[in-house]
Length: 149
Image (cartoon, rainbow, N blue to C red; front, side, top):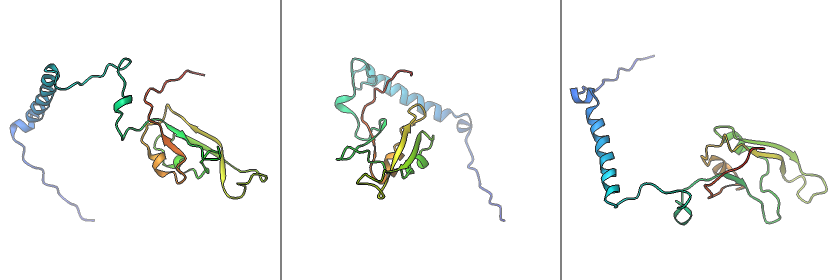
């Protein structure tokens, strides 16, 4: 096995002291502060009074939710791809067979239990991307609150 030697660049004294990086960061911060004081750029939103509803970014990813189809059934077929791809392991699916008297029997599975632990969820959107049935949708709401059981 061959070893590879990487040549490090020679740093000046200012670069060794991180001076250019610190000054560049201070210049950016000072520029933002001056634009805000002049009223050119609004940085802070006063949340309870002001809301994002009118100008929510198109790429915003909210809480994942399960979608139902045109027959009122959950679209999930318990393939468990979302459960496997979820980085924090926030999704738990317990699959079951569809009863024999149902018209969808022997075609698909259905979830006996489908749980998303919203405390663990990091809102990455990978579950929505991997779902072959488009059964998971990331909602556009951002005020997600609840009560303890």
